[in-house]
Each structure stands twice: as C-alpha cells, then as structure tokens.
Length: 114
Image (tube, rainbow, N blue to C red; front, top):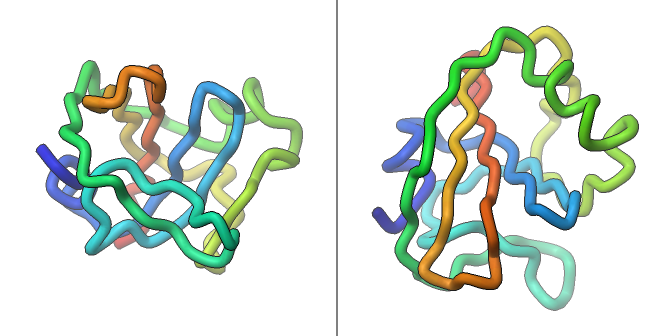
C-alpha cells in the first residue's frame, strides 16, 4: 500500500517515529509515511511502499502515548485542533516502509476522527 488513508480508512491521526517525534495531521493525499518538510511548515510523503505489521485496538490512545512522550513534548508538527486524545479509542498500526532506515512507525487512528 502507498498511503495511510488506504490503510486506516480515515484521513487523519498521529504518526510516531522510533525517535519519539510525533506528527498529528491530516494525511489525505500523502503517499508514503508523512514526514516534516525541510521548512517545518507542512508534511510530505516519499511515495515509499508501506507494510502493516500489526493492527491493534486501543481503549485509550492518550494513555498508551503517555508511556512514550511526556505531555507531547516531542510533538513536532500539527495541522489539527484535535490535540487532546485522552480517553479516545482507536487503532494502532505498526508499519514499516520500503526505506529500512525508517524502522517501525506507529500510526494512531482515533475512532472519532475522520
């Protein structure tokens, strides 16, 4: 697959890299894993192939993320006003790309988001 919209069947969510960097965005129209542009004002894709390793249902995405990031201190980009994800149910997709240096990327798709 080429994009997160096909995988998650929705247009927005959160992308967490192994580095702890977190993107909160609308990923429609982005082929590949969304990455912060060199100017830091938008996200773009590199058209890489995406492989889903697992899909997990979560009762509270915010609780899950609390173990990773302390109050979103590593939030490096957002184009959404949906920053409060505490208590939101959703899916977690663990994804690899055709670019091996990306490692495993975690994609969160809250159920109440589009």
